Image (cartoon, rainbow, N blue to C red; front, side, top):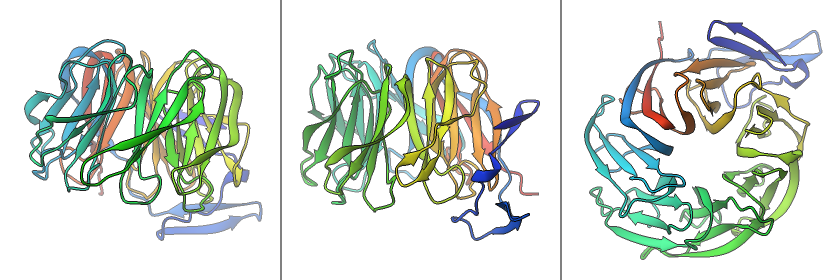
Length: 399
């Protein structure tokens, strides 16, 4: 792969043999070039610029993740920060004013927790947003049920407080309309289990947890990797091991499937995204040991290539997120680093466009993406350790 740099903006050219017509956009005109490969020209929206940063939390805390969601039900998006990691800290709710500012700041922790993530989702099917909090041991893992007004005094614990939990992923794994919880645990012992906690009731929230896999993990992604209509789980090995896709059968049960990446990976996170627009989901992984950000292309169903490095490999990646930032119908890739700006990889019709945002302060542990100022363009919240947490407002110039 070649990288052409233009100041802080670079264009990453894909290997020509991997270019193929995009299938998700009707605004594309595709043609054959010299009979060798397909290329596409697209009437795509412009790549957004970013205003800011706006300081969300000025005190340098041990922030691990962020969520952008309307918690209070007033139609305006709010920001949630998960704070603590290995040390007790207050999870914070910033009530949005719809313009990129905040009218109030409240704590969600009682007492303070060693939090890694706060996932926002309607767990009990009552029409409002609830929160799933993942904490490192010895703190309990729990759900904060919303009473409809943004009051989260109803707390329900699940799992084992002694799980060395990092991040939690919430998704409906058995198509019953109730979001389920996938728990990633980082364990020093090979027998350390990751868990699936199935949501069993829409009236009084309850879950039933079962062991999923052994081995160290800090994130688990959910995606239908083989397009059979059932969600699969992508489990990156955190501490020098082999990563796998676990294949779902649509009931909430999973079997170990194909491997990806090296046998000695130290993957902090993996996300599924179709990078070459061939209809097959590829995998992007960040390794803080090598260090690098790597793309593993799915060449056939459940077959991944040896990988292609996206970044220069001279800075340590800490955070990974995917979202459609430029509104072209394809998910883009966001990578956060330690002591370096974050990098956005815009997933365009025939290339990845690389843009760096932010400064080199602290370590970026997580992102939240959503329209904070309600102008129709996604914004980016950056959760950092040992530096202020900041907001970048996206702006698209259509002229």
